[in-house]
Structure formats: C-alpha cells, structure tokens
Image (cartoon, rainbow, N blue to C red):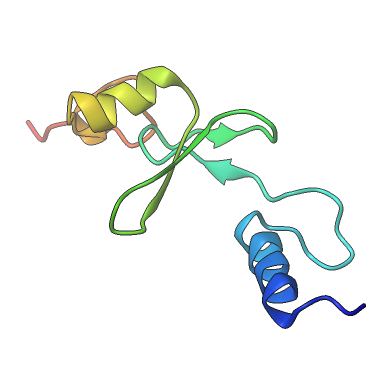
Length: 87
C-alpha cells in the first residue's frame, strides 16, 4: 500500500522546519529569540504563537522575560542583543 501524498508532504515540511537536509544527520543550530545565544540540539523550548510565528528560547528565564514580563532584550545587559544607551 502506498503512503498518501499528504503524509509525505508533512514529513518534508517537518524536515525543513527543523533544518534536516537530505544527506545531513545533524539539525541546524538555532538562536534564542530573546537573548540571541545559540541553542544546543535537544535543548530549549519552541513556542508557537496563535498567529503562527515560531519563537525559540534557550531557557525558562528567556521565555518568561519575553512572554510573561514583556521585557525588551536590548535593555538587559545579560543578553547578546543589548544596546548601550548613547551618552
């Protein structure tokens, strides 16, 4: 019995979403949507909003600062996205 085309297309989109190439066995390294640090494979949180945007977080600290506390990463010194105020 042949697999339905829908199943094959979903599998291809799954591979594309997680960065798996045809001959590559390792997924691509992702960056945290809040702090900008690289996320090691097998760790972190993928958060999907209601509008379909995908956010990746390296820790619960980043997730809570972004979603719950609504903080700006450019104003926090511990993030890689920090911008110094001009003085």
